[in-house]
Length: 363
Ligand SMILES: O=C(O)C(=O)C[C@]1(C(=O)O)C=C[C@@H](O)C=C1
Image (cartoon, rainbow, N blue to C red; front, side):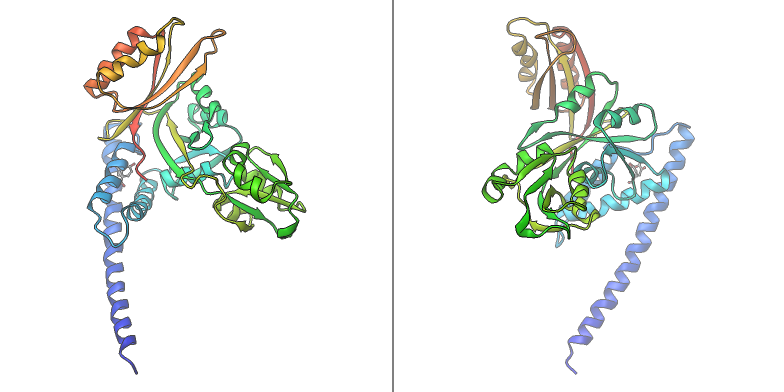
């Protein structure tokens, strides 16, 4: 006998030992989280168990401490799941997302909250907002912008009519695949279903590979995946989750035109989030309709050296040719610099609402 099996045996024994240690430590951590829940409840009977700022700090610390061989993001994902399970022991949280099941928004919800969260599909963005406002769920997840296709106007518009707060953000790399079911042959695809945004993100690839296939827009990629289960000569563009959920074959992988294609999602809730150390703030501002209004609005940010990360203009609901600005910037509303800018902007604007200060996406 060669000595390789003996080495393998020893390594496996070592792994068993380490697994025992990890198990003990995770259990100890979970007991700590249970005690945290008791302390929270003792102070406040309506205690909020999910703490976005604390979760961001835990994950950032793990990434900074990690020295390999697993990469920092991979390690943070493992801790994401441990924390998710610990939170579920304190209080199982319910998260509404733009459905149906298998959408990128569900993937974003699970990436942010971990697999122990209970995720509930909603038929429309407004419904996600309504469920959160009504307290039927603890949080909601909605898409807000895509790196290729731009802003999701419907999400921004819904904020105008709502008192909901932004509690977090999560960015997801979006990979689209061309999928078929067993009813369709690879060389016989004459119709392709997908969400209009996904068609936009795969336009060049489709023009090159399926110039003659009919492109049929539907309400989501997951809906497209579901539809082709029973249709002949049809393919769908959707992501991994939908492919797995509906048992579809991937006939072309990662067909998005831009390799860095990603979508940013917002976590919405009823909670003001304390500082985490690396935060963002989102505001919506209505300006009086006069020359130089945009300059007046942005000038205080420039003077206080606050980094703007996004600015979007949307028509206001209050009259023709009035506009509101959605602005995201780095910093938390409780930081003195940010508070000073917000005071100045308030004086110049006809309306200012802080949608939320929240930790910058970690994973
Ligand atoms: O620190 C807390 O407040 C906890 O509840 C513990 C813990 C964790 O597992 O680390 C769990 C859930 C919270 O969202 C944040 C952190």
